[in-house]
Length: 150
Image 1 (cartoon, rainbow, N blue to C red):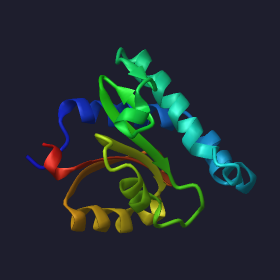
Image 2: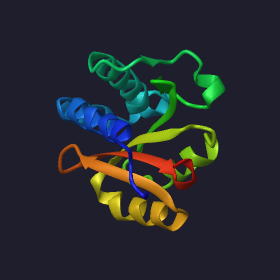
Image 3: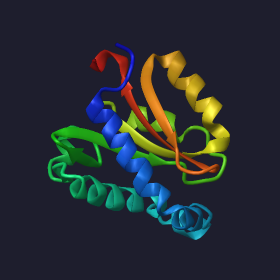
Image 4: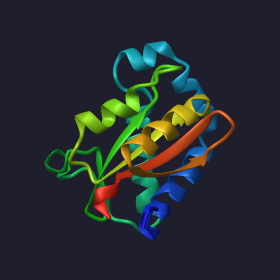
C-alpha cells in the first residue's frame, strides 16, 4: 500500500481545516522577516494550533516525550516532526527536516504553493509516501512518511 492510512488522513484533514481558518495570520507571520530571525515564526505557531486542534478533535496530543521520539508533537503515541517554509522561496527546509529528525514517525509541514512541484519530485525520488491539502492558493499542508513505515 502506497498511501496514508485513515489516522494519517485524519491528521492531515484536521491540519488543513485548522490552518484554513488562520490564513491571514500565516501570511502575516510568513512574511515577517523579524519573526523568523528569532527562530520561532510559523513553526512555533504551527505546534500550538495543531496540538489544540488535535485535542479538540478527541485525539491524545502532547509534547511529553518528544525528545525520545525525535519530534515536535506526539499524537496518539505517534511522533510527528513539524516544519515550515520560513523564508519565501526556501527549497531545502523539507530535506533538512528528514535529515535532522530521522526517527520521527511522521512529518507534517507547511509550504508555499509555488514550490509544490519541487517537493513532489523530491519525495517521489526518495520513495516517501506523501499527501497534501491546499489551505488556500498560497499555502499547502503536507504529511509525509517513509515508505518502509508501512
